Image (cartoon, rainbow over all chains, first blue to last red; front, side):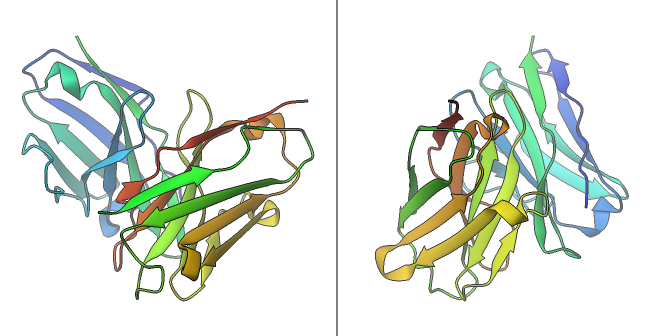
Length: 108
Length: 120
């Protein structure tokens, strides 16, 4: 089955740029979606189809996807961005949904 | 607007069968391409996709849990039901249902989740 690998944690100072990676075999050929999850809350989509943003999500959130790595980039990080971030793809071959292990973003 | 809400027992005993209901509004599960999925999250751990049912009653299951899961829908009641047999303490988790839009394999609207504890 398809596996997505994320770093357990990323730390960044306010105002800096955070980059969270999601690794998978030829992930560049798949559409990657990113979710933000704050404690006690359900996940929220922050980026879909590699780099699109739902309405209401700040432009500070962006995404890219190539080769074996997809990346969620958060520019000008704010304290309110502190959360868990998880990537997700649909594995075409098996018609299954796959989530990454999640990355905890800490704002220093 | 689209809303979903999970309901079911908060505590089940080992070996019992769990039945969860997702009641939704703001969309129809008879609309071409729409799906409703179930995802769970053990305390402090990652999200895990469990199952999804499409508008045409096509169903998909996590390969690791397929033998224990059944997903059904009642379009007239706007409900999706997930059953999981032979519950084990490792199945303790928050269970979410979520909406999957047409032509996009993601979950754009989620319920609030329901915590299910498996303990004797």
